[in-house]
Picture 1 (cartoon, helix red, strand yellow):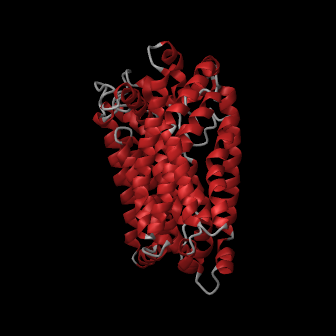
Picture 2 (cartoon, rainbow, N blue to C red; picture 1 turned 90 degrees about the vertical axis):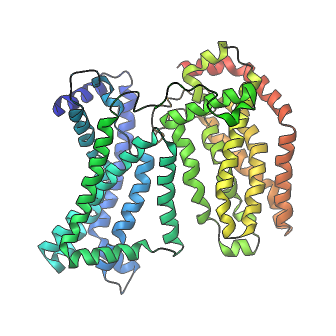
Picture 3 (cartoon, rainbow, N blue to C red; picture 1 turned 120 degrees about the vertical axis):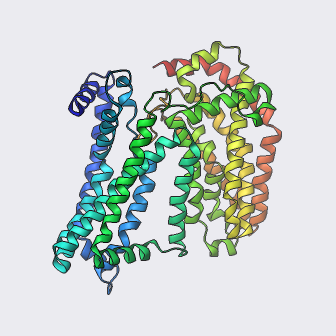
Length: 490
């Protein structure tokens, strides 16, 4: 039966109307994969030389041990964002006389044929067979092989389980990302050394080989949990949405905004129920740790906000830029229906402003932990937050009137360039350049706090004149709406 499933998948691909685009995308993706595989092979075979050059005087085996768990932590973070969830392919079989166990086995088997499962083999196996076998013999080689394969399978099914649970509860996804980023940040700042812990683990695994069984046992456990959950929820409605009885007023905090709140609630449902829009929201949580790469104590102590401004604008307005760059295209599948429905275009635009404001407020509030580094970062975030909700929202919604690219929100955002046009690239320029243009003169005059104040005043001015700008955006939308609709139909 598994061979039949694979045969059907193959035929579905070649009979698809979009097979030309799919083949082109697969070829481009194949080149990227081939490149990374070549790099992985090079790293694997020359790892000893690389380690000796970068860390002279330290045993390559100790460095190798320290990198194993560190690599798989990074692998987990990348998989959460990029690994596909094989669910749509089984929908046509749910009503046939096929056992659920067979379908689950097919999904689990198919998930193992992933680039993410192959890449670590090319990185770790050459070092194991060249160095570990020479130093420790066949037993040590088997111990490492068992551990690496166990970690690969564990990460594979852990990510699938998190994503399947996140279909009904986005909070699980966000928590998973934050845990991974928190561990990476702790290691970066020396609070918890993942490399030291990894080295300790594998030193003990080599000393007591039976400990290597922990990794395949953990992999089997998460495989069993994943398979059990999938078997119990193998229904179309279970894998898409738990509750279809809710209406657009299910979010009480939006009720006070009247018709605008109702439209915002409908779009919030659209965001949370579809893969690509949900990914754009989750990305906001993912980039909460972006400041760790830009915020340095010398910059903070010297009030060099200009060098940290990009990170602050980006973090506090990530949902505005990432979700907003495809504005109106999120509704491309039912845009014609929006035009013929009795919807006030002014309310439609106001609902977008409302969602942007709520999202930016939430992200800014969550980024308050940077206050533990310095209160100055709170002032920086406050200034960029006011700028984003006052200015960035206006810029994004105005440029949205020039976006005619249709968007399939059911597909993953990873390696997906559908809907991306020139307007998306042009949009980033004013969003990032305006804050710098406002701040730089004050920075050159050594008045950094006045620079933040000017940025805040610009945002406040945008908020005070929001109704005026809404009128401009609505007028532009009414002129462009038929062009937008025509583009979305292609």
